[in-house]
Length: 139
Image (cartoon, rainbow, N blue to C red):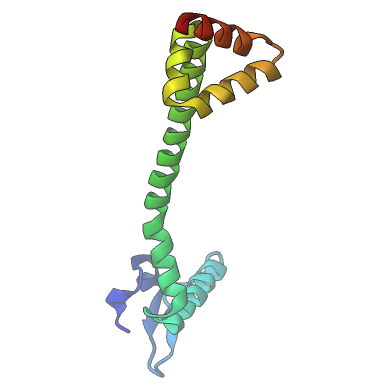
């Protein structure tokens, strides 16, 4: 491996000695432990190699991070749109009997959910009032 493949901060710390082993440059007692830690990280990186699973995993994690954020934001936005859509649909169905009749023709399963949710909340008689009015309007 050449020096240009190492991270810049680690290139300054290491150089090849006469015996072929790497040696620390300008190490003082105060930063010796930090330099040795950088040396260990560098040796681990060079032993893993650029095509090892560890190094590719690090590269993939870095590239997936922005993608994961975009996916999370998209899912969050979709959930918010769904919640507000359901709220406004319920509000409109609760206010207008004519709209409930339209919903009974186009989307009867949504109307059943509306009736169940209102009955569960303690408001009874809406289903019966709607059926009575719709039967009277047919006659």
